[in-house]
Amino acid sequence: MDSIFEGFLLIIVGFFAGIINTLAGGGSLFTLPFLIFLGLPPSVANGTNRIVIVIQSLGGTLGYQSKKINTFPFPIYLGVTASIGSLIGAQIALQLDGAIFNRILAVIMLIVGLLILIRQNSLSSNLPERLTGKYLIYAVLGFFIIGIYGGFINAGIGIVIMIFLNRLNRLSLVKTNATKVLVVMIYSTVALIFFAFNDAVNWKLGLLMALGTLFGAWWASRWSVRKGDRVIRIAMLLTIFIMSIKLWFFE
Image (cartoon, rainbow, N blue to C red):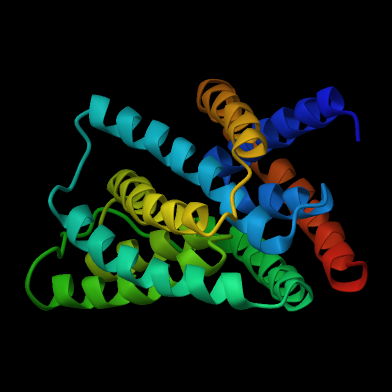
């Protein structure tokens, strides 16, 4: 594939993923399989995708911090245990056969796609926060497990984190998102370093896609309208279905 055209496609896919992440969540369901379709080995595509995740999470964290929305030091506790888990998950990902990884990703894409479609009605708000005592312990332990999955594949993890924090710790949706992006940034940075040390990162492709993701997130945050959300979710689900079939049957 021509390098200029390839770079253009990476930015476009990143842009679309940034919009999806902002409106619905699950941008890695597009960026990760697309990197595989470009010919990267699954382990390298997985590592390269961490560049996109880290940069977008950094942008989201800075955005929330600028609006004084945070739950410090709660996300730091979660980020530390999630980082430990992410090292375990990343090690599993590097050792897994590429064909098996693709099929696992295909199944996860379908499951998470359905969660994205229905999750909006499953979250609650205006409840008293529970960030200390046994609920802090539960959250720390829970994020160790979440970190393992995040280090392994990360696709759709944002939705899982949002439901977890909202249900267990009763954070508002805004604080849930603010906590999510900071924790994801922390453990994804650790996972990225691990993948990089194992020569499983293509920096050029990852940075190009990350550039598109930032523009997409910015555009969606400024121009999104509620009535368009359902159309986007349906289009996303159809795309995920097609990609998952491709991953399962055509290696």
